[in-house]
Amino acid sequence: MSGCQDPAFLNTVIVSNRGGMTFHNILIIICAACCGVTTLFSVIGVGLHLSRYTVPSEQRMISRILLLPAICSIVSLLGAIFYDAAPYVRNVIKLYEAIGICAIFELFVASIVPGSAPQRDAFFEGLRVRSPFAEHVKSGGGSLDWFRTRSLHVYQILPTTVILVTASWVTLGVYCGTSTKAATAQAIIRVFTMLVVVVAVIAILRFHRRMKAELEPHHAVKKLVAFKLLVILEVLQSFIFAILTKSSQSHPPQNLSPNDYTVGLQSLLLSCEAVLFSLWYLSVFRASSYRQHSAPEIGFVAALGDVLNISDLFYGCSLAFSSFDRASEN
Image 1: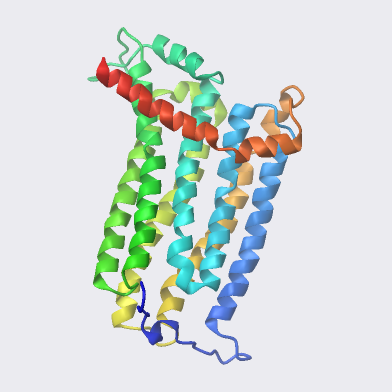
Image 2: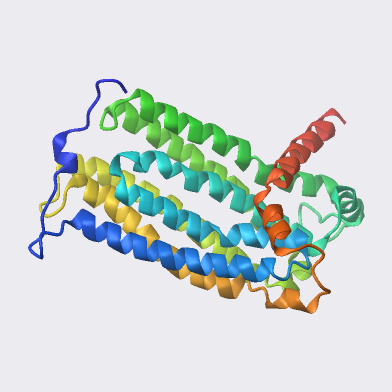
């Protein structure tokens, strides 16, 4: 993007009548406060699980989900401070949402079959498949192919999100931020991103519907709604503010700079939402149910390392694609 500069009016500083504070200054203060509260709630939630790490297969995924509001809040704060960098750093949310979607799916699977991949295959191989014409009627044969298909539909979000985020960064670096080409490229990327998320979420919903009886004791509905709502809100808001960005360039608001109006307000809104979701997550993904199990096998630091090591998700992704290849060959 050499030699490309955004129009000056995008970053025009509008000074308020109260003590020389700009809207941008006030925005940063509010976002920083929200970020502090959200991060505190998220750290408390994760810490409660790590201090009693009795069921790693489930609590590993829960801890990753609990970090999502904090990630959203931190990224929103950075976007509020650095308007020019906001389009770049917001893609971090997309990347972590992909991890979170895989984590909620793995949480549901682990709640039913806490064992290794071969044990899961054996379980679903023995699970009688439902009739494609009447889902309440069970027929002969196992459900392993059905499970592998759901896994593939969920895990496709990891490689495709990495590709789409990379494409977004490339277009932001190649085209001027206010050019028609940049707007068109980003719009196409947003559409594909939404489609990828929809495919993964539908797969999780179908898995939940099929295994509803097994997941009922684990309060899966509340967990799914809490997680899915934050993801849906972030996706919808990105579309709405993309439209507002285009509108503000042709009709700048009177009391705010266009960047305040589009980038700043979006950061503010997501920061406030992250506070509410981080508090809600403490209730939905509570650690108290895991204190009934035996003493933790590993310490706090080792449990933290287990949560931060996401190689298990990449292994699950490779397993989903390799299983699909084997099924295609057969």
